[in-house]
Image (cartoon, rainbow, N blue to C red; front, side):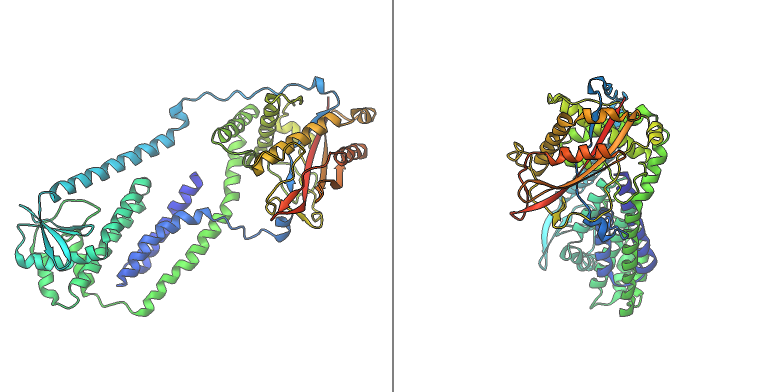
Length: 522
């Protein structure tokens, strides 16, 4: 979220600078008005687009369903129970300080808006309604106010009739073109983005554009001299309310007269708007490249935390995701990362390692809460992990099984017998993953492995298989440091009972899976 706020704020600043440097001095007032209305929306939307300019087709083609890793051991009864993470105790204010600060600022800005609205409504009720052409205007007693709100024009009773005629020609443009809605739009932005000063600059520029448009229309078929005199000779102002269009704003009068005298911009000046094209492309590129920079900064911060602090941190994040209603697939995607095209000896970063360990601890605890007879495991430190190189290997680089479908291409995930009636994609997947893990743990033949006298630690086994159109498990491939381990894993997966096959657009299809198995010896 902090990255999004920073990016959207910087993009809004960039759009504002483009306006100041290239567009502000031009007389294309309507185009400038559109620019000021649209670019805040672009600044908010662009950070949401993450286009990976360097992603290859082959990487996209190898998105297979990776099941949660299964941990089994030579003597499961002796496996040390994983200690539950004891989360750091912090006060509510400390934990949610920035959120509290933002909400406080939002409420304060909203209160200011309501105060200004009530102030305006108070003096508007004092007036007497009249008509000017097709517009309603209200004469406010004992004042020289001159402004427009929505479709109604407000003029003070102390103005002369001649002054009122000049002002009404000006103000009816505000009413006709609905300028108040522009200003209310920026009031909303100010409430939501109260911390961003660029929003306030935007509203100021929009006020100027409104006055230029109204002045242009008021003097379109009339002598400009009397109009100048109206601006210069009347020394009064109106209430300082930012969402109404005020005729007499002393800080703008000089600029308005200069703009009235300015020669109209040539059509070729419209080409300046093309500056937006490279600017938007640059912004998309920045968004696409930000993830890696953020990852590096996160790794730097992570390196300062201890083993237990990292487990606590990511365990807490997983619990918060679960409390927010995130499903199993979303949590797995965030905390069970895989690197697709690295060699077998590659290791995870410190952050990713502890994310995986926190996820596996959470998975293990969930299964035990459901009464499943599964062993826990002791989380090694990152230094021990690197020394043993016991990290789960990434998916192998060969192309996927011909005719198989990736997770993004199927409408219905294959289901283990008994999991088919759960309804949603994620519930079926989670049930199936749990059943496969139970089957592997309960049927792995430790007697075959015992004579191997494997070194203490963790042995990696990686299995790929396809659940075919008929539900049978086919094309099983296993890889491990020891051939007997690979053969046992392959035998085990081949013996899985038939599944309910996956579907794409109502047609049964092959779906490819990957299953990491960690065999631990003590």
